[in-house]
Amino acid sequence: MTALRSLAPTDTADIAPAGSHLIAPDCRGLNFWTIDRSLRDLLSLYLEQKALQHFTPHFERLGELAGGRLDELAMQADKRTPILHHRDRFGRDEDWVEYHPAYREMERIGFGEFGIHAMSRRPGVLGWPDIAPPLAKYALQYLFAQAEFALLCPLSVTDSSILLIQKYADERVKQRYLPGMLNQNLDTLIRGAQFMTEKSGGSDVSGITLTAKRAGDHWELWGDKWFCSCADHEIVLLLARCQGAPAGNAGLSLFAMPRRLEDGSRNRYRVVRLKDKLGSRSMAAGETIMEGAVAHLLGEPGRGLKQMMDQVNLSRLSHGFRAAGMMRRCLNEALQVARHRRAFGRTLIDHPMTRRQLLKLMLPTEQALSVSMAAAAAMTNADEAQLRILTPLVKYRACRDNIPVATGAMEMRGGNGYIEDWANAKLVRDAHLGLLWEGTSSVNALDIIRRAVGRERAHEALAQALKRRLNAAPIPGQFRGRLAALVDRAAGFAEKVATQAKAEASSRRAASALYHVTSSVLLGAEGAELGERGGDARRLLLARLVLDHRLGTSDPFALPDAAWEDAVSAKLLNDDAVSLSEATSLLAA
Ligand SMILES: Cc1cc2nc3c(=O)[nH]c(=O)nc-3n(C[C@H](O)[C@H](O)[C@H](O)COP(=O)(O)OP(=O)(O)OC[C@H]3O[C@@H](n4cnc5c(N)ncnc54)[C@H](O)[C@@H]3O)c2cc1C
Image (cartoon, rainbow, N blue to C red):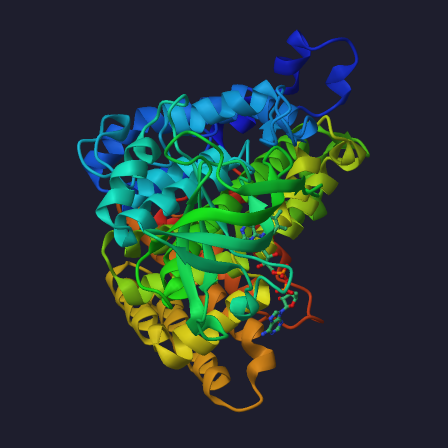
């Protein structure tokens, strides 16, 4: 947040036309890596030192782009949405999608320059000699999301499609598609897509009717798909039912369907319409009809849904980082306004209620970053149980929190926030999609409570890991005890909801409680660990705010301790690092 504060109103007034000093600046022109102390601090805790050193110049470069060129391109592409053409100029029924050049330039940044789609799947991307650590990729996604949300779908679905082909395809299919999918040259790149949802439903895919018929050494697909993001991508993974397979999920198989056949001709499917979406407008999502489209079976017949869940879970984690990144942008925009806009004789940030609102934007932002990082760290350590539960937790809660945070940031800018000149309106529109993709809130909450807790008992591994973290960090004793007790209560409540008949309706409540407790332990431990090294311990204060404000442990009719809140907000809205002893004494107050 350093640079945000140092940007005085006069800095922009010098270069802006007359009268514009009356309007608060936005974050355009700032480096989103440089101003993000939280990201830098957490990467220093979670990412191995050598990787951190190697990737830092790349984070810096993307931070600059996200606050500059990428942001400009994203605003342009959002307004000039893709157009579907059903025929080519020779009158052939070869549908194609026309994109604004701004979208193409963003593709060159995401796929071409940074290789975000390939860095987890092959060594050598961005000069790293091995496969990149998950956190390096997700930190790039988090920075990217601060400018452009929509293109993260193509980047992420290509990444996860590569994984599925590497894992389940036979050698012939691998050799044919993987070299193109793994490269960074836009002219030869093969981008992935995933078409699962049909009209009958995305939450419950047991009614899928797309039919696969055997035709010699390949399969032909007949039927249609209702939601198809990246509709024109070169290889599509989809679920279909082989002829004669049983009804329900057990009859679903996973297929890879190329856009072009080996002889270069178009495969037999058509994009019949593009969706007119609320957000994510630069990306082409459509409806498709398969008319005997050639497809390759991946893995075992009847195991399609299970295999596709690898892709869904990777996307869910990516959504956690996207939500954290978008909330960061919202928070930074709100801080920018609060520090420059004046009303009733004062700068906004000097109004007590503004400071409270800013903290309400900050808290979910920092929670989402901590929980996403912990999930990515679990992936690095191949800690399957923790990854299993943290992934839907962060997808569920961070995507929900993104909505009030985006709305709050829009409101902070006042009427201008509602006008499409500024990033706020787009952030509000884009935020809502996080709720729908890869399972709605209820679907993710049920996955957490019914499956991860009820069947797989992943909450036990999470609770143990949180306790270990609490014990290892220099957290003040009384506060540590309070957090440890809450871990037991949250895990116990999740288990109760998972196992008691008629408790299903409380699944979202139990999942939220587990998320908030998890995040408060992580924030507390991170703050203490950073403070112990002489760094910034402010996350300890945020941990306490989670308990007070997000877990509902305070009395709604009692006045808060205004002196305490003032002292905490002064620390959290200031750039100066908070020492461990300062944080400790505030916690004790
Ligand atoms: C812009 C956009 C792009 C998309 N791109 C793709 C794509 O590329 N590929 C793809 O496969 N899909 C895609 N989707 C589809 C998306 O994944 C689905 O919309 C989503 O999974 C929800 O499915 P549905 O729309 O059929 O709603 P439904 O499944 O019908 O859900 C309706 C409501 O019922 C609720 N519900 C369902 N089950 C339960 C339950 N057990 N308990 C309580 N409530 C329940 C849901 O929470 C929801 O509120 C896209 C969607 C959008 C909006």
